[in-house]
Image (tube, rainbow, N blue to C red; front, top):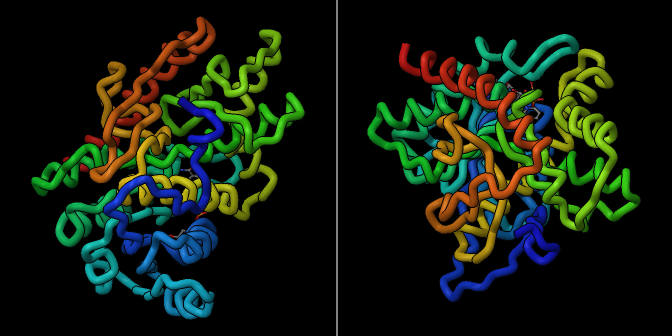
Length: 335
Ligand code: NAI
């Protein structure tokens, strides 16, 4: 499933379809932020993007002017402030949302809920109106609650298509690939670790038993590696010492995920990426698992697959926490 041939890349025009389009409108909400700026840069150099719409409540004219000088085809427009949101999102094929506050040392992702839930809700309300067909990728934390918020908003508006809403958990996969490659002296490019569950602490479940290439570790090492992958975001928050959380690695991961969405839209086959989506593969109504992406978003959810005893145990611990996070999001959206 995660062979080297199928490994998603950052930008790719590999195409197996006769109906290729190569001109998609991508909107970034929160485009002036720590993630938004490098993510927009990577999208500007993606040949599948013809229109790059940058929305934020500050600084978008400058970010857009700067990026617009790069010698690629994508036309860049900056939209500043809520009165321009509808125009920014109108008819977007893909909307990526890194809008909201990041963590400071000592904070959990849940501590961001009060500020970020409202931001995500208002962006989703506008998307429901002006871009109901868009594939929406959510980076804003807490992802475990933000995705249910967006889905509830779209449901209320009669516009929910669960195949089109994604929590971007790609950074967990990117980190797992990197850390395992370091341990085994492999090239990270050749390593693939599926990560399932959610995107915070114990809800992050790396499936090291399903690594490509196959790897094995003594139990104590397996435990410490799993904890490192689960806590990798906090590693960055601590190192940045108050200046935010992961931005550059997240921009990379967000661009990789956006590129996979675009490749699916463009008719490429066998585009597989895990993401956190509305799901019936466990008793949690939202869950991250590997997905086959296509012209309408999720073509097929590949589910859990085989788990080792150790991973089954991680899953058991993750589910109650996930359900709590999901309930908080659903409650917020409906209050
Ligand atoms: P940042 O503070 O540097 O940037 C956030 C941007 O959002 C700012 O430019 C701000 O003006 C903008 N913004 C605020 N309210 C807005 C609104 N109503 N509409 C549009 N834009 C708005 O933060 P950073 O570091 O870029 O992080 C953004 C989010 O991404 C945080 O919630 C962070 O926790 C999350 N994150 C998620 C990761 C993941 O793996 N899914 C990894 C790392 C961060």
